[in-house]
Figure 1 (tube, helix red, strand yellow):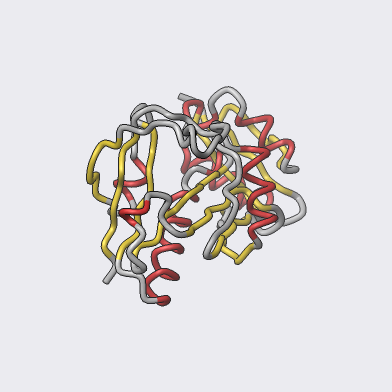
Figure 2 (cartoon, rainbow, N blue to C red):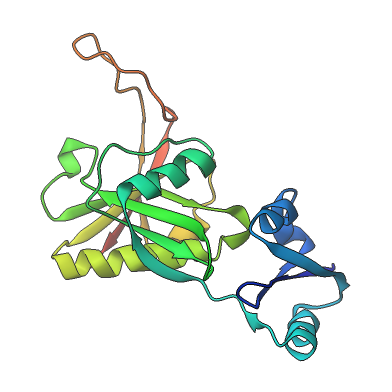
Length: 209
């Protein structure tokens, strides 16, 4: 396995990714975000990090969270999310930056299902992070839980598609609660166009009180 080293001149930060982490589109995502490919033939992550620090004086990429408006978060979701568009409202949203650009967002609001909407439950309705920055997902979940706890919420929930691994949920200490049947919001009395997957989903829960 080979390791790829990218450095952004504007922030002088570097990111190291293995062949498997980079995947098909990773290089082009990083280049669009103004990272320059420095070396694609390094034998280990340790060697790549040493190379970046010694020869370029670069520091390791540190993702940071910042508040963001629903309009800005929704625009990011509409551009980068694989299967969802932006929700109509939120309680709050948080972005994750690489020190220069937004590379991911998370949107939290009232539970969509009425039975979950008890006044002390918050639902993460969207989480969207560019593929090469996936280690930022857990950081965003943790940030939402901290804010929710400070606001007095007792529980945070979210849904994933059953074909998704749920690795980020487990890493963030969410518990798999149930399998939801999914379904359409369209009905005879209230016509709607579904803009989301209607198949089965996993419900994840984290108690924060």
